[in-house]
Each structure stands twice: as C-alpha cells, then as structure tokens.
Amino acid sequence: MPTNILLVAISLFFWGIGEGLFSYFQPVYLQQLGASSVKIGVIYGALGIAMTIAQAPAGFLADKIGNRPVMWASWVLGSASAIVMAFAMTENVFIAGMLLYGLTSFVIAPMNAYITSVRENWSIERALTTTAIAFNLGMIVGPKLGGIIATASGIKSIYQYSAGLFIISTLIILFAKKPSETETHPETQKSPKLIANRKFFVLLTSIGISTFAMYLPQPLTPNFLSNEAGISIGDLGNLGTIASLGNVLMAMIFGGLKGPDGFLVGQILGMIFAFSFWQGQSVYAFALGYLFMGGFRLMRLMGLAFARTLVQANETGTAYGLIETANGLAAFFAPTVAGFLYQQSPKGMYLYTLILISVVFLINLVLRLTFLRPQSGTIVTSSTSVSENLR
Image (tube, rainbow, N blue to C red; front, side, top):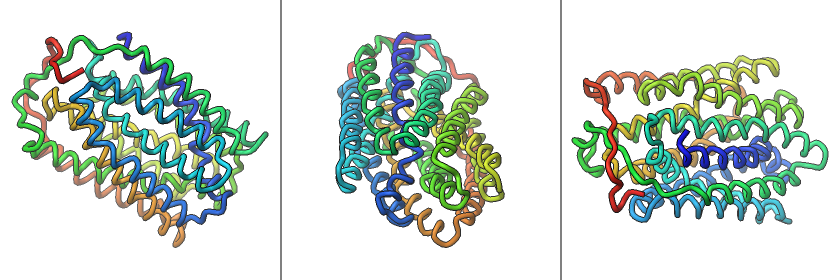
C-alpha cells in the first residue's frame, strides 16, 4: 500500500470512530433539545448549505496551492467544532457547532484529489474505496460505542470522546507528504477545459440528482426508528454499526468495478434500502436496509472515479469540488423535503424515495449507454513529474 494512502486511511479510521459516536444519534439529540421533525429537516438543510458553500472554492484552491494545506485546515476545524458541540450549554451553541462541522466537508474534494495523486500504481477506484473502507471500519466501531456511552451517561457526553479522537486523527494526517508524481490518462488529455466540458457537466447534474434521491430519507431515519418502530438508543447504535458495515462490504464487493458501472450499482443498492424500510416490520428488515444503504457512499465514490476519466489532471480538485457542491445542494434540499414527507407519512417517505431512485436510475442508465458512454480502448496509466500547480 502506498505510504500516503496508508496515513490517510489510518487518520480516517480514527475520524470514523469519532464521527460514528454521534452521527446516528444527532437527530434524536436534536429532538431531545425540543426540535420538531420539520425543524430537524431545516437544521439539516442549513447543514447542507454549510457543506455546499466551500466545496468548489476549496477544490479550486487545492489545485492552486496544493491539497495538503486545505486538508489540514479542515481536520483542525473539525476538531474545533467537535469541542464546541461537546461543551455547548445551549441549543443554539450546539447547532452552531453542527454547522461549523458541516463546513469541514470542504475537505472532500482536496482529500479525494490528494488520494488520486498519491495512489502510485493503484487504480483510482481502488485508492478511493480503500480509504473509504478505513473510514467506515471506524464507523462500525463508533455507533456501538456511542450507544453504550449514550445509554450510560447521555448522548451529550459522546461528543467529548469524539473531540479526542478527532485530535488524534489530525495529528496523524499532518505526516502526509506532498506527492512527487502524478498520473495522466491519454484520453483525458484530449478532454476540453472544464468550463467547456459538456460531458462533465451532464455527469455533474446526474450526480447531484442521484445524491438527492439517495439521501432523501437518511437524516430522519433515526427518528423513524425511534418514534415509529420503537427502537431503543442502544439498538439504534447497533443499526448504525450495521450501516457502516454495509459501507465497508459494498466497497469491498463492488470497489473493483469501473466508475460508471459502480455508479449505477450503488443506486440499485439504494432501491433495496428504500424498499426494506417501506415494507419492513421488524428490526431485522431495518438492519437489512441499513446494510444496503452502503450503496449511497459507493455511488458517490464511483461518481468521482467516473468524473476523473472526463477531466484533465490539473483540474481534478476543481472538478471534485464542483461535484461536492452538487452533493451539498442535494444535502440542503433533501432533509427539508423529507421533513414534510415524514409529517405526512413516515412510511410513505421511503415509498417516494424508492420511486425517485428508480426513475433516476433509468435516466442514468440511458446516459451511460449514450452520451456518457466511454471511449473504446483501454485507459493506460503513465507517470510524469508533478506540475507546479498540482500537489
């Protein structure tokens, strides 16, 4: 394994534990603080805004000054936001910490661009899925520990442990080195500049719509399980662990696919998730649904790998930033819509999700076979010296 990939993987493992401690309990904690389902949806919508506004600028900045400084800034900001949430004495301060944590998502584009540039002889799909597996292994541990801690001393206390784990993760990522070489794809060298790249912008739109469809019910699923299915806090943590296990399994099973194919497979898995919650009557059905929710992360990773085949190497950060901006917009609109759907019919929220994913899948399949069909021939990877603007 390339050394820098290993460092990123270890750092993400600790971060995954820290985030897993609270992520599946956060909507329930907001409810404990007095927020309604609609208000929780609005809060997550605001979180989506925070996740959106910095994505494209961060990707562009990473192309100019290098990925590592932008990555490091995000890690430090994430640790600080966890400290704010851990010691918040009022609801407003806690929400401010949540939004601050949402801003740290600007790391996604620079981090994935960095992973792409230091993968050495690994494929893009393998590098991205390996680091994702490391993060989700941490997310397997986190919810279980979070459930134990929350049951013993309340949900609020888990944020203190998260802050400590984030600090450890930050110290590890500081050892990541600047890449000494980068790869080129002959077919992407023929690609037009990003601003004039029609195929990329069609894919960008497709990714944004797909993310909206797949993410729609996720923010309110813990509330559904707690309020409608009567799932305890401890069992909610167990289901969160299963969801993270699903992320790992889906990445391991389908991580070897080419980006365009994996992008579609992720959506099929999302349909199974929605169907399981729509028709499910037991904790086992919900566990199955959570397992297949791993298709959401698989789809996002494969969307990045797909996009990389359409753009030039020195525009990778900007391209990834635009993709995460589209994902952030989806994360803004989806929870708000979900809040209203949940008020009308908690179960119906999953039926609408199933229908929407099915329609989006068919559209993406047609695009895959027509406008976004890959060029014939095998992509050959070669190494050249890193340019001044790509680090």
